[in-house]
Length: 496
Ligand SMILES: Cc1cc2nc3c(=O)[nH]c(=O)nc-3n(C[C@H](O)[C@H](O)[C@H](O)COP(=O)(O)OP(=O)(O)OC[C@H]3O[C@@H](n4cnc5c(N)ncnc54)[C@H](O)[C@@H]3O)c2cc1C
Image (cartoon, rainbow, N blue to C red; front, side):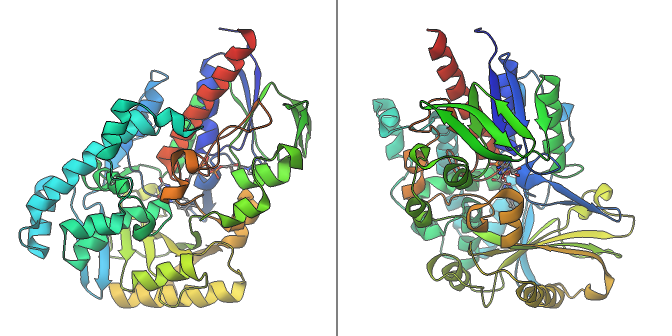
């Protein structure tokens, strides 16, 4: 190996932590600078009166990505946390006392499909076989590419595979081609919400997410998603990474197309290489002088961002029988809500929402006899965010929850905190207050995404949910791995 270099990573989200681990293993001196008081980025934890709330991600999907990451260091997820497969994986409510639950076992899933749409279990097999193909090809041939340009994808073998990936069709038509029943269609379109776009705007290639959902399953790390952050922090520190919290980068200084140091609220720090895991738009527009920015303000304004969210972290002094760990309230018109997120951004009239209740699986996240609830309502990024608006929706979501589940909870609330657009901006420098980056639409996929490399500054790279491969915890971990490998290429080029 060449002599160790000083690598500065901005942001301690999954992408930053992942890149840090890989580069530290190669012998480099890695420092992560994090503006908040706690590592983990969007996956921080908030604790209050015996309740422990995961502030962001709650769905642990694609367990193979976590296994492959830890395997790079001779470790397994089970060295750090205990995983439980949730069965049922989740519940979808359509109206009061009317819901379906997604079972873990494939045979039960087939029965569920048959019950709802006779004759559909065979189609499900076909659909999932194709989804599995897409998942496997994506994992082996697509997602680990830095996607600097289209030329990376010009390879006869890859082109042949790409033809089967349905890059040009969309998820809506793909699902509709196989299934007629609106509920099954809704169930199969649901994972698209993780990609931040509508089913009409998401390439059919992403039915790979149905394989992740229905075959690989929904898992839960006991202790919450925070355990994954802890695991990565512990791994990083064991490899010599230094994590400096409460340290905000305010400028990246460049001399002759080379980043030389970062200015922080705690002084200047020199670096041989910088990897920016903070929100890309913030780094590009706020931390760099104009000549070194990859994009203009207009470019950013035209991106389709993933939604923001209105969230409530709620502690109850009683248990709520009848609900599951993951509960989707699809008792409203998805099209209308989607329009109010993407087409004419405004606060939704009849929103869909999601309620996570991890205390159903894990006693450690709430005091005895209590329940830990996390409400999430997707909204357009950049909306006006006031206390009055939050309160209005709090009432609306509570009423819907109570009437659909038949459970009264409003008199049992002992902890209550809201979180929305302004908090995303303040806490993460999130562009327009987006919750999970850039939507995975066709024209924002692979080499159409904001580039991982800075075009002017050779030793500056970007990682995380606004660049390749996209939003979500597994993609952020992969993004960090790609950035680390690109950084290693650059550092190697210095000695060759
Ligand atoms: C409410 C919510 C629910 C979600 N649900 C899921 C889910 O269930 N499953 C799933 O897989 N994904 C989910 N996601 C998406 C997932 O959490 C993210 O895609 C992923 O965590 C992003 O990681 P990241 O490293 O790219 O960015 P981040 O986690 O945002 O990390 C970036 C870090 O940079 C720091 N930073 C910013 N500016 C500076 C600066 N100037 N100086 C120093 N530090 C700075 C920030 O504080 C932050 O810690 C969810 C996200 C949210 C918000």
